[in-house]
Image 1 (cartoon, rainbow, N blue to C red):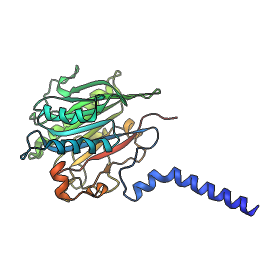
Image 2: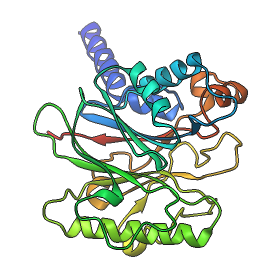
Image 3: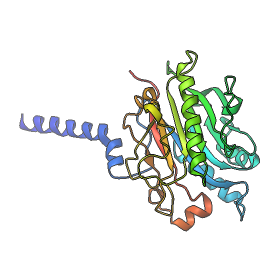
Image 4: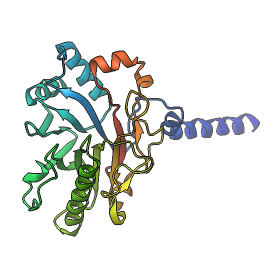
Length: 293
C-alpha cells in the first residue's frame, strides 16, 4: 500500500511538472520554447536597415536571419526597417514557399507570415484599405501595415495585426501617429464587418517612463502590455521602444497579459555577434490563444 501510494504521488508530481513546464521556462528566462497548446506566437522585430545597411548583410547572414526567425516558432512576424523588398524576399525564400510577405517599397513596415499555419484574409498598407481615412498618416514616415489572419484548423476566429514604426525624432509627430491609430482602431471596432481582436506591434520610438504613446491609448481603447522579463528592447541596454498594444478583446486572448523580450543570452549571442547578423533591436512577442475549448 505504501509503495502504491508513493507511486501515485510521484506520478502526480511528474504530471504536474509536465503541465507547468512552459511557465517554469518563462520563470527561468529560458528561450526558445514552443507556444502553449492552442496558442500562436506573434512577433515584432526591427531588423535594422534591411537592404541598405553598410556593410551589406552577406548571404550567410541572411540565412542566419531566416533561421533565427524560424526558431521563434511564429507564423506571423511584424518587421520594421525593411528598405528593400528584394532583400526581404531573400529572407522569405530561405523560409520556404509557404511563407509570404506584405511590403510596399519605401514604407519600411512589413508582414512575414506562414500560410501553412495561418490564412491571410486580408493584408495591406493601412493607407490602402478600402475604408481608408481621408486624413493621411502623419508625416508619412512609415505607414503602418496590417493583416487579418485566421489560424488554420478548427473554427478559430480571425484577428488583426497592425505593424508600426513611429517617428524617431519628433515627439509631436509621434503623438499625431498615435492619435491617428486610435481613430482607425475606433472605426474598426464600430464596423460590424471587422474583428474586434486587434494587436498593434512595433517600434514606438521615444523612451517614455510609462507609456510609449498615450494618444494611442486614449480612452482605454488600446492597452500597452508590460513585458514579463524587463522593458529594455534595445541591445544598448537603455531604450524601451518596442511595444505591443491590444484591444480588450485581443487582451482576453493573451493569457499572460504581457509580452516577452527575446534577449541575447537566450541564444548565447554577444552584442557584437547579434548586431553583425541581426539588429540593434531585440524581438518582442506575445502568445495568443488561437482557439479555446
